Structure formats: C-alpha cells, structure tokens
Image (cartoon, rainbow, N blue to C red; front, side, top):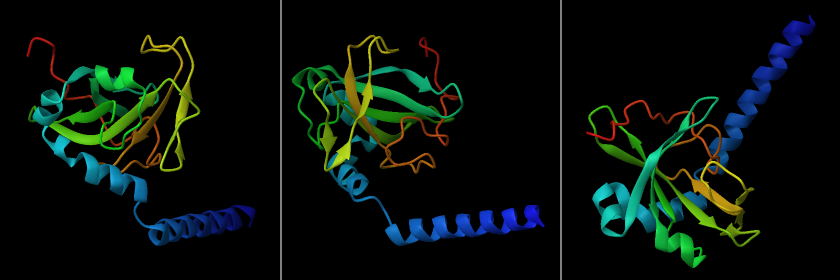
Length: 166
C-alpha cells in the first residue's frame, strides 16, 4: 500500500511540475540572449569578432558544455553586456559542423547578475587557471533539463570533437 501511495504521489508531483513548466513558458532572459546573439549561429561570426576556441568541456557525471569560443578582450573589460558574451558555446556535430547551444557571461567582479539572474561563483584554483570569477551560462538555443542557467547540459556531447590535426 505504501509503495502504491508513493507511486501515486510521485506521478502527481511530476504532472504538477510539467504543468508549472508549461504555464511558465519560455525563459525571458534566454529569449533576450537569443535575440541579441543569434548572429553566432554561424561560428564564422564568432571568429570574426575575436572569439577563439578552447577544448570541448565535458562533465564527470555526463553531459557537456561544448566548445567555448572565448573573447579575451571581453574577459578583460569586466563589463556584462547581453550582446557581448565572454564565451559562445557550440556542440560539435557528427558531420563536423558546430551548433550554437549557449553563451556564457564571465566577470571577476561580483556578486554579478544579468537581468536579475545571479551568476555562479567559481573559486580559485579552478580548471580554467583563472582567479576567482562569476559566470552565467544561458542555454538559449538548446534546452537543458538541468536548467536554463546550469553549467552542464546532459543533452550536449563532445563525442564528435575533431582531433587538433583535423
């Protein structure tokens, strides 16, 4: 009986969560990010604006962030500008193309926020070799079951990353 009741409660909770997500609709900040940065759908736009790739980042428990194209000048200027993300993130596809999935805003000044969304704090030392910094991923082009602002996306993979010589 307890098992049946747990199953019913779990089903009800899942249905309620799905209803809440359906009512809340798309994320307004993700929509603004998408509108301000859709020029990066073609990776050539990112490189033309001074972004350079760093290796594809995968999570130890699955999922990935993809290949970050980072703009060093934007990293140094400490400004948070919705149309000038410090990193643009691409998922490598099986056909060798890169698909835009997200952007990342980064600053060492904090606590930081964009349109009311707080950034995550990263202490030093970290895997990037940077000092302490604040970052905000916005999964504006690929849905993320972990959340619009989560670091890793379980739906993203580095599986098709090309070797450096290619």
